[in-house]
Image 1 (spheres, rainbow, N blue to C red):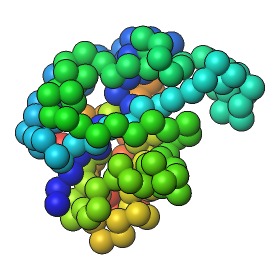
Image 2 (cartoon, rainbow, N blue to C red):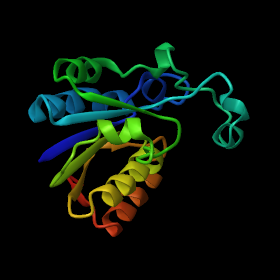
Image 3 (spheres, one colour):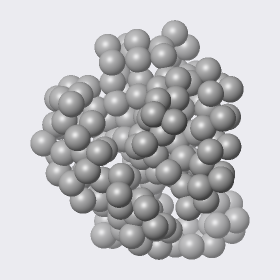
Length: 176
């Protein structure tokens, strides 16, 4: 099965606490890609923190409160949020950069099989690359694909370097 994972396309990463210029421009194209895949073939992750975020390891290294469960910043963004809902996409909340596939809830939410996995969303150099590695480990025979036009970073140079790293991890990079 071919499937799509929309990584952390949430308000706090687009126009909230960790938002950056250009992130909002991905919205229409990501929403269109979600609709192209259609029902039963789309998953999404949500970066999910609690009120004690600043006391976590990540919070000490990135001291910006963001994506606190239940807040507006935690919600998916814009047209993409609508498309995910329309297609009945499966959501996976994660407390770290990559999904915890050892968590029975996460494991139950993942596709049973995958031949091709496309990733898009934010932020390329943190959560997209982390989840590409997680999915590559979970589905070692699947083709991992990242569309360069459907991901981004607050640092364009770091985004380009991350696409190089993804290619080095044997991911197929589209539209570069």
